[in-house]
Length: 376
Image (cartoon, rainbow, N blue to C red; front, side, top):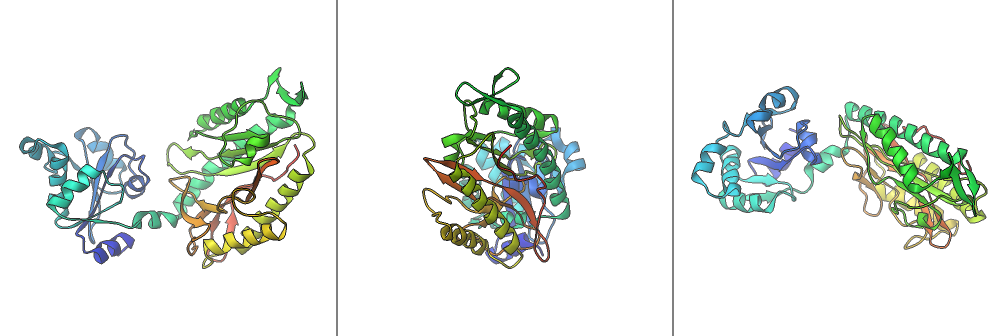
């Protein structure tokens, strides 16, 4: 029995059911099948799961899916549609026929389907079983994340290289190649490079100056000499769907003393976190250790200072379990998490450093090999 079988047994349900395309991480995780159209996944207790797909996708699904495969016609949907005027009711009847009893569903199952299934078979809402399964990565998943991390580091090196080669003009605006160096320009070059390497990427952060005081400000306009530039890149591999996540903060020229001090504190916090992370320690414990370190140096936690969790799981989503923050549970071998302390002040700017690593049997192994340097 695996975790899903145990969840079915505990709930008294006969089968687990979900609906979605491969953009839905749980579907991609359980089926390994890539499709833009929604499909149905059904797994009865102690049995292999299977998907129900259109006839058009049947042969491809047989070759690629990590599940059994059935067409909609073989599953009875076409026959049921002749009897039912409502497509959701018809779909629910098909699912109920194959489930064979009460149905365990994810909390984000489409309401219309859940309503009809509740009437036909009875529905029980799952409490995150698949998300918990996804938190512990296999060797293959770890290799997939490592590959996209290497590509992320190439993109980061290119972005920082542009800043390094730039020259200040006109009140400190950085110029490169005869035109101003802007957040939009750096972001565009990062995206082009990553897309050429087979990655999907969007919303990359390239913020400068006071923009950096807001952790998720994407940034816009010119980059300036002497100001912090936060670059946060989180692409996914188009083939595997796995993400990585990485942040660096750099300054072209001479940063303000406050930024230098913040950078030193953030770097020390990242090192401390890496040293205490190991299986059996909770995410909350690691987070609190960094809160205590920052507090001892005069940096508070709240709307300014250290304003976010220390880290998060990475996999088929860029933010998934486990959490390194308040309420974060026990960490275990196979978890892949970020280590990203940061400090943010509206009048000064922000500093963030983010690495990614794996929980091994005895500790935490960082797989980010990119250097940490403030001045470029």
